[in-house]
Length: 425
Image 1 (cartoon, rainbow, N blue to C red):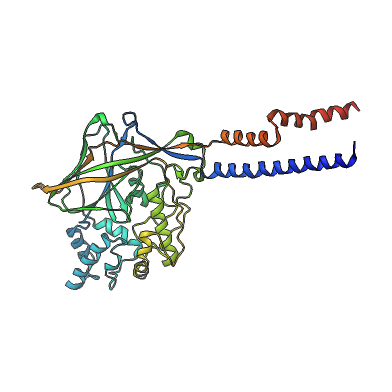
Image 2: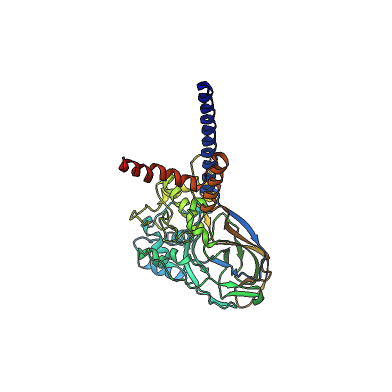
């Protein structure tokens, strides 16, 4: 044999093996990246008689927030602060505006008199003077629904069929509580149940309504509906839900592109995760970053023990300048990174129709589902770790003609057989 040809053949084989190894490593990295970034797929399920539909949750924010009698009693107990009729009238306007303060109307709050009230006492004072909103609740669902008082970016409101509202209650915050709460079963309905309605009776005031899923809270950037205090209103909704397969729990949040309620490691104001809670936290920390303080309707005592400053008049003036960025969470002046993932099991509701009529017994609200959804979205595992192994094994077999048995033989040759020969010698 010609030594030159032997060397040439070896070089050719070595080049082929190098090219094969490069192709295997390159394609394997792409496979691994795909497994890490997009192993899930969202598909449609049309078998509507198999699955249940979540009943719509809502949050009601009454327009009347302050009790006039409590205001008079408060001013009478502080005569040194309210010496004139003008002071008393200014305080009535101030406390009413403060009770209904949101990012949308933050510039309307009078900031010429503080009435000796420090900003960190705003929330306590609002609860001391709040009007007792006590509507009655009834429903045609098999599971009982409850109405909970909750603090939102719109002030003191009340949520029905919510698994999140109680974590934003005044008592929960003031007790510095971080424990998980028992909410019972999620209220669901089935096409065989027929038309299901729930009703809030004796609202006694005009109000705003926000419809959302049971695992979320109202969002200031979403649509709201306003109804007067003299109407009986019926609202009919349609649902679009997305559920995540049980196998997806083994994947990371980066792979799933969603979070379960118990994945609250990054949350600072609640022991659970919710997309709406995450957006609210993002607004809170953005306000803190730009203005050095946060509005009074946020939980300023964080999970790590840090206590945030509540905005005084100067802080509120700063918030006025960035109100558009706070609402939209988009800015050309500041960097805003929320990193909020959607809920893995999420419900979205859209108003199909609503009608109102004069009602001599005061404001009543009825809502429910008539047309059950014919489609449901499902997040399934498309590319598992087993698929990664099969794919990489196929690449190795295609480029090198190797198999798992070949690697076992190589390992055997360089371990057990080598040791046996050394001992024999």
